Structures are given as structure tokens and as C-alpha cells.
Image (cartoon, rainbow, N blue to C red; front, side, top):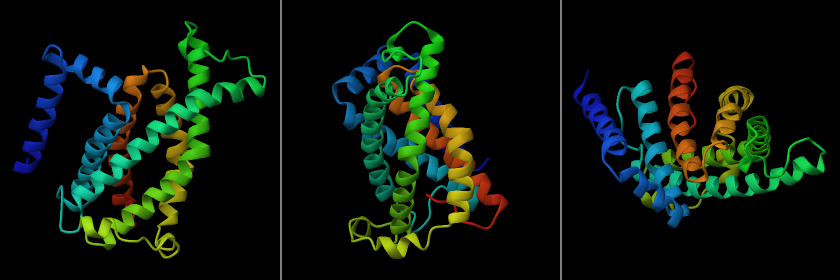
Length: 234
């Protein structure tokens, strides 16, 4: 194991141990999430998903960072995504039960708060399907455009805040990977089941779990990239 791998392993183990064994840490974390919901969403996504991209780079390029990778711009991008994801979770968790009622499906509007497990799972599944097929594709395209922009501007903060030529950048997306793998496979077989679990969790844990899933997907995409020649959409 390389020194960098050992350091990463030690840091991850230390953080997990602090949350698991130091009294009051997890409770304080939940309290901060309740009091500063969107700020904590920014931090959770910024840290965890940037870490996930670093792991993906380690798998594909044998290093955690490299010139032009742009750790800080990626952190800012993922932090902003965290705000958007949190807002989407609130909108869909509140709106889909009304849609379910309008469609006449036998699920009470308060299923997530109720005690019937089948109703809770059914409603969580409906919310997951809605958010993944109505919101996720456009969001993923926008994120891919932003990630390409970071790479093309050298991973600098100045480049991150420079204007984006969206129409040109859309033409640079690897659609075989984004559509053929991410949309057609991960949405149905990864995100829908995982986000069903997400909406079964307490509200303060949903964004954290979603950010952790971003780490997992980064690893999945990295292995998919190793099987082909296409670059992984960041």
C-alpha cells in the first residue's frame, strides 16, 4: 500500500471512529444539520463527493489529485449541488405524495411518517422514481458540463467562475457513457433503489446518505471507465 493510500485509510478510519465512539459528536452533527440545513448540505456534498472523485481518479490514474484536477473548484461545485439536492429532496418529498393521491394510488399522503412499513417503502419508492426520472437527467447533464468546464480551465478558481460555453461543452460530453451507462443503468439499478432507502431515513440523514452514495457512484464509474476508453464524467 502506498503512503497516500495509507494516509487516506487512516483519516477515513479516524473520522468514522470519532463519529462512532466519541460521545456527543453524532448528536452535535445532527443538531447542526437541524439548525443549518442548507449550509450542512453544502459541506457534506462538498467533502464527500470531492473525495469520491479523488478515489475515482486514484482508480483510473493511480493518484488522488493531479494538475488541473481542481480540488477547490470541485468542492465548490459539489457544495452547490448539495444545496440543489437538498432543495429537490424537500420539493419531491412534499410534492410526490400529492401526485400519488391524484393518481389514485393506495398510499396515504403521510406514509413516510406513518407506522405501516409497506406504505413507507411504497411512498419512498414513488419519490425516488420521480426524482430520478424527472430531475436527475437534467441535473446530471448540467453537472457534467460544469465538470468539463473545470477541466478545460485548468482546475483554477478563476476558471471556475469564468463564463461557460454551454452549447460547445454539450458537444464534448461522452453520451455513450452518460446516456448508455449513467442514464440507462445507474438510474434504474443504482439510484432508484438507493434513494428509496434515502427517503426511509430521518430527514437529517438523507442528504448525508445521498452524498455518501456519490462516493460509491464515483467508484462505480471509475471501474466502468477502466473497462472502456471513455473519460468518466466528473
